[in-house]
Image (cartoon, rainbow, N blue to C red):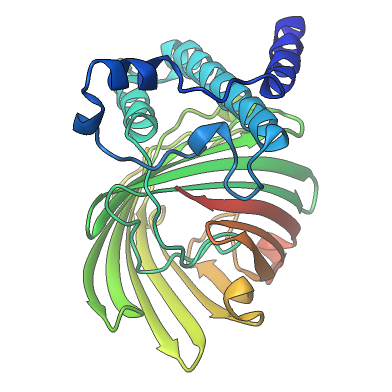
Length: 335
């Protein structure tokens, strides 16, 4: 399998330097049969076999090919894992729902959408992804707790289905011991109202699967639900975001001692104008069991292109239940 993978990478890189400048088979057939004008214009994630944040050419085409291989391989292994673990831990309806969501998100064509609050913040903003648009985020976090070190990579997709509604999926993978997928989350956001384009309120509903292997220390073993209200406001040049939500814990759902209230607040300041900003946030909840994630985070983002950002952040715990330090870095890409 490894030999096939590296062979595919070598071919994708080498082929870019010998790619034909003539129309591909579909474009040629569309022109010959006179149905090209019936097509609908769409914006692809890697148009013309290149990465938008790099100049067009063989290097950009090669990297786009490698990216395509990695995305295809990731989806393949994710599907294999879900199906394998599903026979042991999840009913068929959950597996089906997950695969349908992934397929639906990946299938539809991509369009550009505006960027607002994003990584490294945990706090959400009231904005929703533009209708027909996509957002992709990938982040890596290394967290030192009292007794362990956890390294987690998270992949997140969002798509705007209506002018004020989007749907997303978040897939976390732990690479430290024990390694494996953690609980997958689905997010749905509905914008309730908006003022002046920068202020408004949104409702968000989350559902957390119990696909993580609890016996190996992955996931919580519960199907959890969360209903959250999100309010955003401009104060001068600073964006302020407030989140307030109720979390219903799965197995003992409805028992007050297990359910809890979560609340966060975040600030975004455009320190580099349109090129980037600095962020800060506070997050906590009133759960009476560990871990109670009361922490503060400071971070920054920088735009490499109008639709592509890199970020980094550092957070630290504020109470005895979360004596933790965490470093995170990632990317935010709009389609």
